[in-house]
Length: 185
Ligand code: HEC
Ligand code: HEC
Ligand code: HEC
Ligand code: HEC
Ligand code: HEC
Image (cartoon, rainbow, N blue to C red):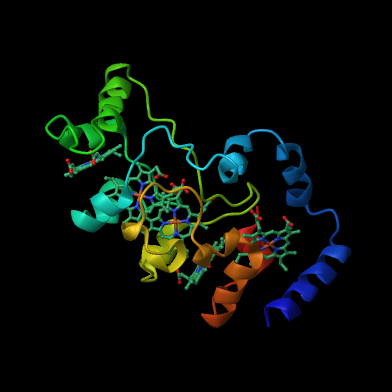
């Protein structure tokens, strides 16, 4: 079904060949996104070795305690340094105190932590987290079992590489909107 749909999209594109977003994508090529693209060769580029399994697994912290805007905004959001400090002024870390110490450094310098972005769709695509969370999806449906992972380096296979076929096949299954303009600016 996915393939059939794709052929349809290509045909449609041939007739509407000047869609602005196709062009808009080009200048971005090879510019800003470079660090994310290099994650495969650099196994662990994160500035702090933040373990999801410890926080969301062992200590069962709610995902939205840190990704605070997932149910009300387009972006899930990343926690500010002050959220980390809320606990780590008291918790030095038993195994990797040097990683925890970096938190205070960023905080005292008034800097945010320069996390490397892992999940990203092209700039011409609109993905609203809140619509999906409010439809009842768990984070794990699209991101995998994050609460069992150490430092995140790459997307889980269930993320479908953020490709159009992945989005559209679920929209077809769930009978939700799939006009081009629903997802494309
Ligand atoms: C204590 C705070 C905290 C909790 C709790 C937490 N996260 Fe995170 N999460 C982070 C931080 C910090 C990052 C950025 C560093 C990284 O990518 O690991 C992040 C990154 C992510 C990313 C990747 C973002 C990107 O760059 O694409 C996903 C997906 C994610 N978290 C999902 C979850 C899910 C699902 C849960 C619950 C099972 C969860 N998180 C719980 C702090 C948290
Ligand atoms: C609700 C409290 C809480 C928050 C908020 C929190 N942590 Fe933690 N964190 C912990 C606990 C508890 C541990 C386990 C400490 C231990 O085992 O010594 C931990 C462990 C860690 C470790 C591993 C240290 C080690 O020695 O095992 C790192 C790195 C870390 N946290 C970074 C962060 C960062 C970065 C943030 C903000 C994005 C954050 N934490 C937010 C409670 C928290
Ligand atoms: C229906 C699939 C889907 C679900 C459910 C989902 N995400 Fe995402 N997530 C994505 C996609 C797609 C992106 C990339 C979005 C982009 O580049 O604009 C993303 C990006 C992210 C990011 C990085 C950028 C940002 O938005 O801040 C974080 C963090 C994240 N998701 C966390 C979560 C958490 C936490 C949950 C559950 C509360 C969740 N996601 C549920 C598909 C999903
Ligand atoms: C696991 C299934 C699933 C996946 C994967 C998924 N979606 Fe959705 N999406 C839904 C559902 C269900 C809704 C309807 C939510 C509602 O009724 O508000 C929706 C709604 C939307 C909407 C709002 C539609 C409207 O009518 O305004 C947009 C935009 C959207 N999705 C974009 C995306 C994009 C882009 C991707 C891939 C990066 C994606 N979705 C992946 C299930 C999914
Ligand atoms: C449910 C969301 C969704 C719908 C509906 C949708 N697209 Fe897409 N589209 C995407 C995503 C996600 C990507 C991939 C972005 C990426 O690779 O980061 C994409 C990529 C594309 C690309 C670029 C291909 C490439 O290789 O980057 C074109 C062209 C495109 N879509 C055309 C269309 C047309 C034409 C329609 C309507 C027939 C359509 N799309 C409907 C989500 C959607």
